Length: 159
Image (tube, rainbow, N blue to C red):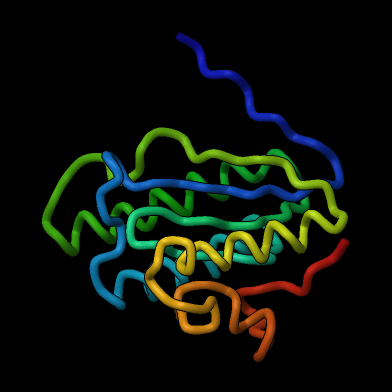
């Protein structure tokens, strides 16, 4: 059965979600989280993607991305997921798929919902009861967005 084409909307950004195969953990150690973020920085530069928010959960990832060229989003995610999968499989001496199917992406119009979506992404660890407040979770953009702007990873929100 053919896959349905992705929906690309001009002047929109995207809430992206990708999950570990069979909901398995995709991050086992702090080094794994750091490596994913390092690959994410490279992917941002390679594909001219602005990143407004992110959250790396033990078995899935949320990104709020704004590509310069809408159709580059798929290439960006393919490069990012493939690069991290190669690292993960080599480190843990396994083979096969790390990610469950295609990444999911939802277009977000640049209005107040953009800020709400960033907040929703960063509150994910609180909803999962990993921490009691978003500022405690070190694998999300919360601290970068609200306390110390990191221009290499998180971009300033533009409506």
